View 1 (tube, rainbow, N blue to C red):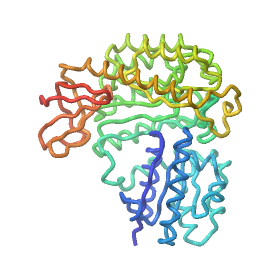
View 2 (view 1 turned 30 degrees about the vertical axis):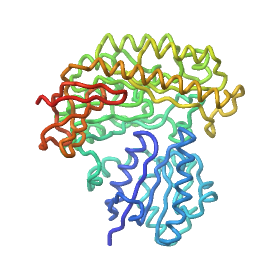
View 3 (view 1 turned 60 degrees about the vertical axis):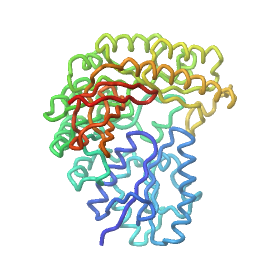
Amino acid sequence: MSKHVYIKTFGCQMNERDSEIMEQLLSQAGYISVAEQQDADLVIFNTCSIRAKAEQKVFSLLGLLRKQKEKQPGLRVAVAGCVAQQEGKQIFKRMPHVDIVVGTQQIYQLPDMLLRLDRDETRREISCDLEKSFTIPPFQKLLTADKGQPPSPAAPEFRKFVTIMQGCNNFCSYCVVPATRGREISRPVTDILEEVALLVNKGVKEITLLGQNVNSYGCTNTVADQQAGFADLLQMVARVPGVERLRFTSSNPQDLSTELMQCFAELDNLCPHFHLPVQSGSNAVLKRMHRKYTRELYLEKVDALRSFCPEIAISTDMIVGFPGETDQDFEETMDLLEIVRFHGSFSFKYSDRPNTRSADFGDKVDEQVKGERLQRFQKRQDQISLERNKEFLGKTVEVMIENNKDDSIQSRTGTNHIVHFAGPNNLVPGDVAMVTITHAGKHSLNGNFIA
């Protein structure tokens, strides 16, 4: 008899990909995905601990889930992802109704864990030692999972994430990734190409290559079957027949090579969009963050990118109120924003994260000051984003359809801009259309269908 699973994903695209893998593995074990939590026999929260708010939300939702389990004693509850890796068995103490804790590289063991739970083994025996989880090869069953049953119909089958590496060796002072995802390990080139070809044969048209720092792919390679850097890998994936659009995330400026930047001039299917996190515009703050580049180097990289691909859209991440950030430091961040004029950004107030060096730093910035700085940054970014979007007015652009409901179509440009337009009913997700832009907002564009 089939069981039903509900997976809620928090945080980044890496977590979205991990959720897909868990869904595929569970489908092979007889589980069917459902869209509503109350319809599930198994609830999995795939968690993120990059931001304090995300972690707090997980525990809040777990608290609410206790009531559902009281009414439904057979319900299984699992916590996966970075919070699971970070908190380990402390989750059992805080949330006694949780059955399984699954670390970031234990997800391939999830079906076995559930079988053992059904045999009435204790939770602590099933949720094996998280400290040893990094000895498990993170890609050992990835292709097997992808060859199984497809994920739920709600998944956007015209585009897929493909993990090319995990972990990070940079040890930024504020970041939990080395503690939750481990050291960098690159996946074999042949496995990546095989998975991309498999996905294209299933009808996928857009591929996004994923890693904590894709720019360092192959640099600390212990498992790859051939020597290849990230630019080499991009070239090979771009040549796979049927890949219409190619993207990647995330990148560290220190490892951004000229060879990679040249790819934007050479590869027609590489989308002209680059998410390049800077985190701060102040050299003093970057040094305390242990970001191994300067403001000047970052600006040089941006100029070089635009020389290879003038139409490229650049977005970033920004942390406001890092310990020790002075008014002058913040002004340097605002100045960087004016120079680069990012098309968009993800900006956050700094928050202490467990097991990071910055949590022990003195000179914490007052919460009110952090809030005022963030508000000022985001207000100016919104203005610049609108100005950037107005540059599209009157232009005809190629878009890929994401959904089509009642002649209201949502699509996306290669530069990662969302475009809404009215068009024919026969356009389906993954189709390509030409649209002339007639209106620009802060976060999206509107246009007229041409063809």
